[in-house]
Length: 159
Ligand code: ADP
Ligand code: MG
Image (cartoon, rainbow, N blue to C red; front, side, top):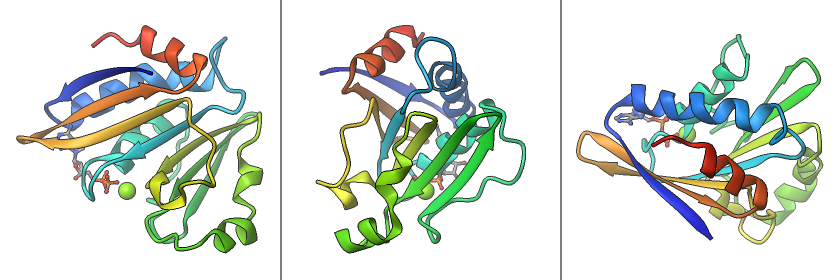
């Protein structure tokens, strides 16, 4: 596995990282077929802030809510679907099956998942795992690639 750690001193740095990843995830040769990103980190680490910035960069213009209560928020830009999931409140695999979450992992969708560890064993490995940790007033982001596509994204990131 290949990984990269970046220090993000403020939210603008988080947004800049999202700006770099957005075109890789949603277009061209590296996306969008079934692209998936997992986001880990404590409450307030910036998983939603990063995802919101990425979705904005991908062209989503309306309100972008945290899916912490609904488990899922869906968006569509042209023919591409974006699914933002948060498994913080997820408790058992029946919930996963009943809600048909597996159907979201489709070729015409980009899937972003907060708290993927709460649904461990139910999720395939993501292209990229972004782990966010408090570091002083800012955050450290560790990006780990689990697929060849994720590796391509990592290689394209300018620290
Ligand atoms: P999570 O989804 O991980 O629980 P949120 O994204 O809801 O966290 O909240 C993150 C908070 O941290 C927001 O208040 C946001 O403004 C702030 N934040 C985001 N990125 C950074 C950063 N790089 N440095 C400092 N604060 C940040
Ligand atoms: Mg969140």
